[in-house]
Length: 98
Image (cartoon, rainbow, N blue to C red):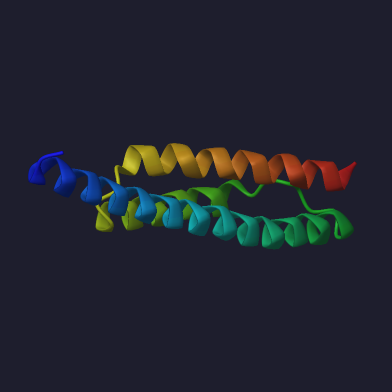
């Protein structure tokens, strides 16, 4: 293995270790987020509130799209990801209403 190849392999290993750590952070962060949204779903069910709050969702999407731009993350991707998460939360809230 040449010095360039060895250096590239070391850099690749470092990037992959960082990616693995960040993936773990994302999973644990989503887990924590869903704990709170589950509590919201129970609260909504107990008080006969609708499972979805379109005004809140629109505000969140706008806020997180701006954060994505500031973080150099594609805002279109961020919006798609957030919409996916929101739809999952709404489905959980609907389950509590049943």
